[in-house]
Length: 168
Image 1 (cartoon, one colour):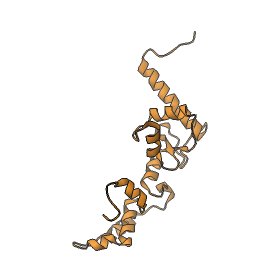
Image 2 (spheres, rainbow, N blue to C red):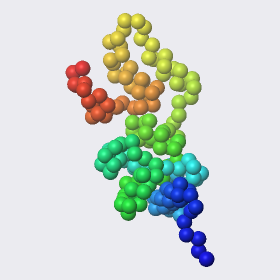
Image 3 (cartoon, one colour):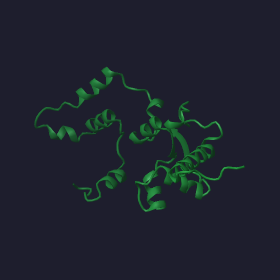
C-alpha cells in the first residue's frame, strides 16, 4: 500500500521546499550540480544566483519585495518553468561576486597579501585637515581596492543615495 502524505503538515512543507530547491539546482546545474565558479558541491552551501547580478530588481518584480528569498523563490522559479538567467553558486562565490563591483569572484582575482593590503592602507593616510587629498582619483582607487568594491558606477551611487544630487 502506497503511503499518502505526512503525519505532520510542517514535515510535508519542508519536503516540498526541499524538492523545489533540488529541482532548481538540477535545472540550473545539471544532475551532478555544483558551484558554477568553483568545485564546491556540498548541498547546504549551494544557492541560486542571478547571472547578471540583478537579484534585487528581479525579486522586486516577481514578489513586489526585494527581500523575498529561500523556498518562496525556488517555488516561483519552478512555477515559471525555470526561466533563464540563473546559475548554481556556493555562498562564498555568490557573496564574493556581490562584494566586488565588477561581479568577479575573489578567488578568480589575484589576492592581496597581508603586507600588500597594509601598504594600500598606508596610502590612505592623509593626516588631519587634508580632506582635499581624499577627493583625488588615486585616493579613491586605493580606497576601492582596500574595500574590495572597485569604483562604484555613477548610477550605482545614485541608486544607493537617491536623495543626493550630483553636486552634493
